[in-house]
Every structure is written in structure tokens, then in C-alpha cells.
Amino acid sequence: MFKISKRSFTQKLVKTALGVAAFSTLTAFADEPFKIGLILPMTGQAASTGKQVEAGVRLYMAQNSGKIAGRNVELIVKDDTGLPDVTKRIAQEMVVNDKVDVLAGFGLTPLALATAPIATQSKTPLVVMAAATSSITLASPYIIRTSFALPQAAVTMGDWAAKNGIKKAVTLVSDYGPGIDAEKFFRERLLLNGGQIMEAMRVPLRNADFAPFLQKVRDLKPEALFVFVPSGQGTQVMKQFAERGLDKTGIKLIGTGDVTDDDLLNGIGDVSLGMVTSHHYSVTHKSAVNQKFVEAFEKANNKMRPNFMAVAGYDGTRVIYEALKATKGKAGGDALLAAMKGQIFESPRGPMFIDAQTRDVVHNMYIRKVEKINGEYFNTEFETIKDVKDPGKTQ
Ligand code: PHB
Image (cartoon, rainbow, N blue to C red; front, side, top):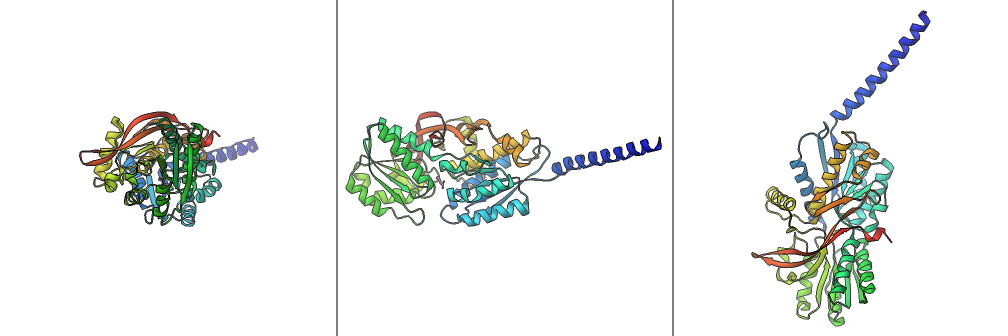
């Protein structure tokens, strides 16, 4: 008789111990902050991207302060100076030492690709808020993207160019992932519509000098020059276009919206007028959500204009917050990742969806034209192509 009760006593003790342990894990994660490790180029050639993404992240956090499912959200920001080895080392430190729940940021494609294995090994969701080469999301099953995929913009521009009578074009792109995507997908669409690429030029990413390439464009006399350079380099290519007198030759300047970055347009000035580009965000996008976003962003950032990088930071933070709400505060890579997939909401860019299959963003593409309104330069949207998936994933 005593034996039995002794056994059940032990069982009870074990049960109680398990219960206490379970309870303390519950309270442990409720007490611990949820950590976002944001890695961005805050210095160097891509510093404007870092500044914009960080400001977007901080705005979302300021507008949604307080606890998420009982947990404080902590942001750790580190500058990778735009170098992949540095991004990777910081990510490793953030995962191992800081024990971040999510990695985010990634200002350039090589920085995202260098970090992908760390996300996979540690099962940490990695939210790409800037880089845009199509293949990035294939580098780890833990990657989610809230920026865009270059083929979305390039295909849209290729279709528009062909429909608008452009038969002979030259392409000029930065010589790395997103530039090669832009060149390939623009070319495919133009050819499909009976057009021709006279020459495909690739310019080094670092310390780019566009002058010799633009001289060649002048000699080739295409109907249009299609350009992709990453956010931050648009001023240089546009100014050199004007310096070489190409704006007087009748060669149409077209490209992806990275070139006529909202952030830079006022500094670029008249040479940008009339340039047609395709992209997913313009500061003048007409919606109540965007109007509120732009007002709040400019107020919080000393009148700095948000560009598409800021929006991706803002939306990426929303995806993280909503996932944490859905898991009721439980982090853990797989649960959080699952809650990020399939999110659908209205972004300042328009409707936006994280495709659960590809973990990539599906959103509208807009054809825009640079206009001067009350002394300021803007990308005015005049055509919408709805719910564009990355064409790079469907081939
Ligand atoms: C990239 O490196 O993937 C990248 C950076 C800036 C852009 C677009 C793509 O504007």
C-alpha cells in the first residue's frame, strides 16, 4: 500500500516539476524581449539605403509601440558598411550572442546571400528589406522578402517599351545580381514583342563611371536606353547622361524606379523630367495609407522623403509584428516563419502579399513619369499592372 502511494507521489512530483518548467518557459518568453537584428549599410556607397530602411523600421515601431503579445520588442542595428564578410560576421554574433529572433535589413544582394546559410543553420527568419535579385529567396527557406524582385520591374518596363513603339534599345546595368536580372528580363520582353537589343552594357558596381558607356550609347543611337543602377547611384548616371548631351539626342531614357529614386529626384533636377520607369512605390502613390505614411515619415525624419527602401523596412517590420502576434509571442524560427508566410495587407505601395510558396512579395507594378509639381520632382504613376509575381520564379 505504501509502495503504491510512494510511486504516485514520485509521479506527482515529476508532473509538478514538468508543470513548473512549462510555466517558467512560458513566463520566460513573455518576460524576455523579442529581438530584431537589423543589419544595414549605414556608411559607404549604399548608405542612403541603410538610412531609409532604418527610418522605415523605426517609424513602424514608434507607431506600434508597447508590447506585442506581452513582449517588448528590441531593435539592434549594426552597420555592415556594405561588405558581405562583415554582414555575415555581424549576423553570426547577433544569432549566437544577442540571440536575436529575426534577422532583417540587407542593403545589397551579396550581403543577403552571404547571410543566408546562417539563417538556415540557426533556423532564424531573415527578412530582406532592400536587396532585389530574384534568386535571393532561394538561398534559404528562412528568407522572406518585403522589398521587390528586379524581374517584376524589368518585365513591366519591357512590355511598356514595346507597346510604346520602342524597337531598338540599349541596356546599361550595374554588373551584379539585380543588374543582370534587369538586363535579362527587359531583353526577353522586348524581343518577345519584336524588339531588339543593340548592345547590353554592364558597369562595375563600385566607383562606377558611366561616361565611356554613355558615349557608346550616343554613337549607337538607339530609340531608348534602359537603365538599372541600385538606389543611390541614379544621380550620377542621370547627370552624366546630360553632360554628354544625350538628353538632346532624342534617345529616350527608361529604366526601373531605382534610377529615379524619390529620395534623389530633387537633387537630379530637370534632366530627369519625362523619364519613364516601372516600380512598386512612388511617394505620390494615391491612397490614404500612403498619405499617412509619408506625412508621418517626413515628420519623424526632418522632412526626408521616404523612398521604396523606407517602405520595405516599414512593411517588413509589420510582417514581423503580425507574425509575433499570430504566434502569441512565441518566437522560434519555424513558428514565426510560418506566420510570416501568406500575410496580406495594404502597404503604402498598395496591396501586398507574401506568397507562402515563394516567400516573396506579390504587389502592383506602376509605370511612372518624372514630373515637376510645385517646384519639386516626383514619379507620377499613370498605369498599374496588378498583383505581379516575380517572373524569375515561374520560369
Ligand atoms: C540589390 O543589391 O539587390 C539592390 C540594391 C538596390 C536596389 C536594387 C537592388 O535599388
